[in-house]
Length: 130
Image 1 (cartoon, rainbow, N blue to C red):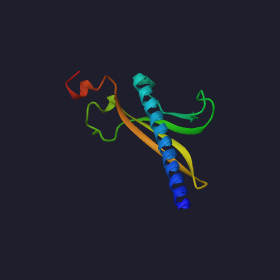
Image 2: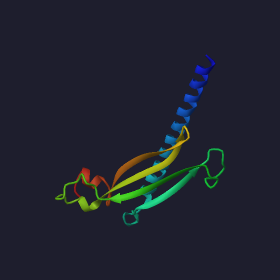
Image 3: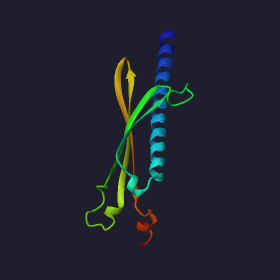
Image 4: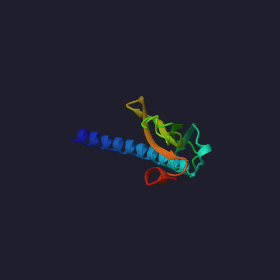
């Protein structure tokens, strides 16, 4: 009975730990996505980043789990080549990677988020002509 209780607690703590890592990765992606909203059209470029997180630290410079990632900007493949607005849309993809150690073995985890960014605002393409 004690062994079963121990296995239950250790499995529960492992699930909580993985959930916290996933949540932090999602927070990082949302932070980068909000930064994309503040960029002008000419500032949208491909970049790499590293974000460290230590929940017990008072600043992000205190080490902890390292989340590395990329912000990729490209032309959406889902838009037909004949579409007049194809050059006015960009596909922004944010990918975050981190390493989790499961039973002593490194396991690389990742999450990804995508959005479209319009040069003159989305309303011109959905609701009418500019």
